[in-house]
Structures are given as C-alpha cells and as structure tokens.
Image 1: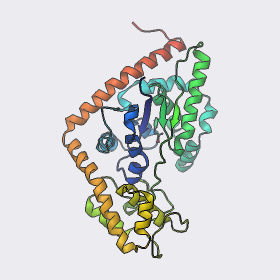
Image 2 (image 1 turned 90 degrees about the vertical axis):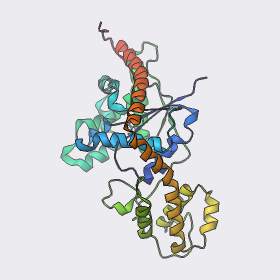
Image 3 (image 1 turned 180 degrees about the vertical axis):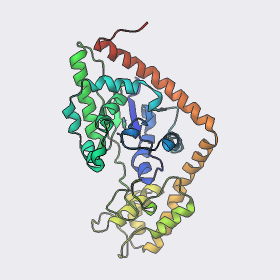
Image 4 (image 1 turned 135 degrees about the horizontal axis):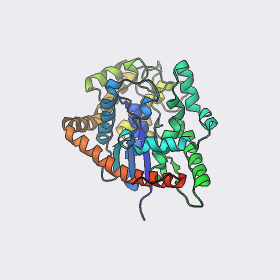
Length: 335
Ligand code: TRP
C-alpha cells in the first residue's frame, strides 16, 4: 500500500520563533515517515499582504533551511517553493472561475485581516484560500495538517473540489477531497511579556519571543527578563497564572520530560531557581537546530539542489493534475 500523501504549506515570514517550532514545524517532523510528504514554502501567499521585495527570497530560503534543520527528512519529504511550480498559479485561476465569491467573503481569516488593513486590502487576500486549495488539490493530497485557524480553509478546499468534480468530472473524480490531519496537539506558545497573548513575530517587542536562531546569550537574557508572577511554587492548570502555564509548558516541551515529572520537579520552585533550568533546556534544544542550520546555509549549493529536486518532483505530480483539470474544463491541448 502506498503511504497516504500529506501536503503542507508554510509562509516565509522570516525570524521563526519557538511558537512556530513547537506549534507547527515539530508536528510535521514528528511522524513524517508514515506519509509521503510534500512541504511547500508558500511565497505566493506571502504577497497577499504588503511585503518587502528585498527580503522575500532570503526569507523563503531561510524557512526552507530551518525546516531541514528542524529535522525534515528528505527520505520522506519533498521540500519545494510554491512560486517555482507555476501550476499553483494556473490552477488557482481555473478554480477562481468556479468558486462563488460569497464563499470567500465568508472566510473568517479574510474578514479579520481585511479589517486590520482597511482600504489597502488586495484581491489576492480575498483569493488566498483558492490558492491554498490549488496547493492542496494539485497533489491529490490525502491529508493536510491544519491548526484551528486553517480548518475553514481546508473545508473550503473540499467544497471547491466537490463542486469541480460535480460540474466537470463526468462521474470521474478529477480532484481528491483531502482530510484534515489532526496531530497530537501542537503547543500554543505564548509571549514572554504577556502569558495571555500568542508568541508572534508581529509583536514589536523582541523580548516577547525567542527566535530559533537566537544566541545562547540572547536566550538567557530574554528568559531572565520574562514576565512571571509573585507566587512561590510553580503549577500547571491555574488560569490565574498564564505566565506560569506558558513557561512550564515550554520547559516540558523543550526538556522532553513528561508533564507530571515537570509538575513534581517544579512544585516548590521559586522563579529564581526555575529560570536557569528553562534557559538551559532552551539552549540545549535549540543548539542542534542552530548547528544544522549553520551547516546548511554555509553550503548554498546544497539548499539550491534540495529545492531543485523538490521542484522537479512536485512539478511531475502537479502538472499531471493540471492537465486533467484543463481537459475536464474543455481546453484544447497545445501541440
Ligand atoms: N494558510 C496556511 C497558513 O497560514 C499556509 C498554507 C498555504 C497552507 N497553502 C497551504 C497550509 C496548503 C497547508 C496546505 O498557515
């Protein structure tokens, strides 16, 4: 039996932090051997909001390198860049023409982002989920790892595929309907300056997050200054102590110790004793990732060759689907 195929996309945002790692990347990497994985750096999605042309390419390569450094294994995974495979844009256009406008206007993420941007909203932002549907459907993916915020987009992908098959499939299934891949809960990592807010790259304060490539010195400083509370003894599950929950969870995930072991170890600890422990665990967890990252970026040719190979494999699958879609829509095949 062939392995189920997984398609996942990650935006090239630059400056990846612990939240990206513990909440997303680590989940791809864990269990990757059970699937045939296509991992796509979605740089076409990156320009649906205002972006800086000077950093787009560098951010794209950085996230590809970080993914490899975090353990993405090329024996199981195929890593490529969305804009390198032109079938993504082309299928997005074709799907645009069968997607009702009001489906897109109803998307929660669009509404939220559109409000933030006021007058400046691009058509691309509205169309973002159709491009995402194209990403997924091109590979006839069985499963897509989704967090809460992307569930609605995956539903839409299924709706678009079903509509396409119904209208143009002539009883044949042209596009496969993907299922969500729910993995052991990705951690929600919170800000170091406010335990009720998500760690985010858009927070203006550097102190609020630990970046994957922060030096040991920087990590130590950030943890030293992070927000805590005045209670002696550390515990999970106290809703009045969001910082305590966050920092203990970080310690648990980064040290790899089971939750009950961490709970027992820290029950009577003061923050002054705990912080050095967390610092040590963080540095130790990030060190191998950073070493691997440095080795990858030191050899530019290596990353280029990984992405070239990824593109070739992706294109073979994507172009086949695209041909079937075009044939179903009635296009002529050029000589
Ligand atoms: N929208 C996804 C996010 O912001 C990124 C994405 C684009 C994606 N295309 C995808 C995720 C295809 C999964 C599958 O996280």
